[in-house]
Length: 416
Image 1 (tube, rainbow, N blue to C red):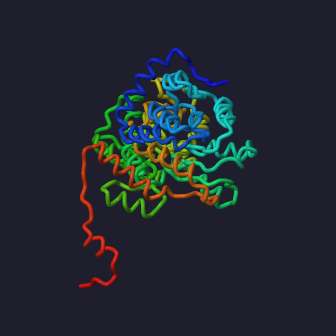
Image 2: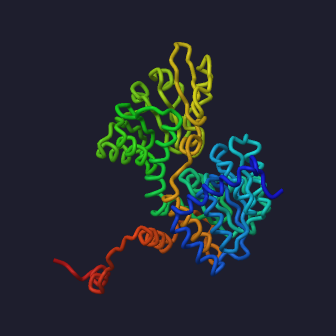
Image 3: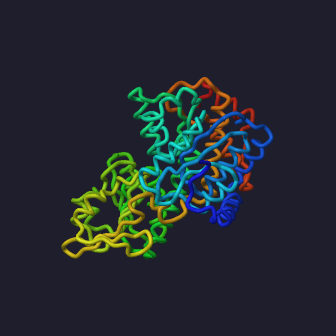
């Protein structure tokens, strides 16, 4: 089977949206042009488990232009854009993704992609790598390396490496500066608020907006919420992050206290059970809960369901939970990534840099067989190349060091 999608009839609309995204991705387009000439991925088979969006479609096109054989599945059951999947299938790209697919279908699609017998993997959340290591170990020996797109996946992979369970090298694309300083911060900030507003159409100004987690994603969400007039409260477990949030001008308090005053709650931690039964018990009537972390475990929906006397879908993407005292709590996007479950994900202009890193790292691992089995940083020259290409696409030029300045920076002899 070459694909499993919702409907081939959606392809025309998906093609138009992919074209629109392509216009916002000049760095990836430049790489695609070079790849088409040089074919650096000739002979490689790339299995990708990513959010199936218009931006991802453009990454797949770049990899194909570079000579790779590719196959794509979804990294989240609710993140697939069915029209995008249909358009890719119409182009001949094997894609296995249906919006709202159940757990069995989700893992069936991962295994369908692995049937490609990949030499390179691209992951978002490490489910593909986990499946390889737990159920498809026979394929690992032919894999050169992989790349991981998101914070949650990098955490899982570092845990695997620490336990000696990781069996091939992986590059932490998420940790590239041109990824996490832009995609995580600007992308997550804007797209999370987009998802909340599409699902609820609420006014954010004047509301108590609780952000659980103050990493790059949480910082972006907090900044955008404050810009919309919300009163932002940060909940953290890391002292340095909490201190930075306080000095950035936000209130900082434990979730037990924030639960009593919050109007909107967003989890962005990468951890489980951040908002739990004891927090639901004290929330205001009408409180809105959502998650912008990778997995749907940050808000304890099982506990909330057990406390509810009635549930109903009150708006697309918004589920109402009525408690026995009459209070109503609202969960967006089934507790999954709200920016993809209730909106379209990150803007293409910021994914341009993230996916440029993916494409260039694929080229790097295809020609480099010297990586040890571990989680590796993106090579600095790739990070710098992506930044320079993005600046050029924006019409921005910067200074260069003079020979004297280079000598000064490399010398230890200069003093007062």
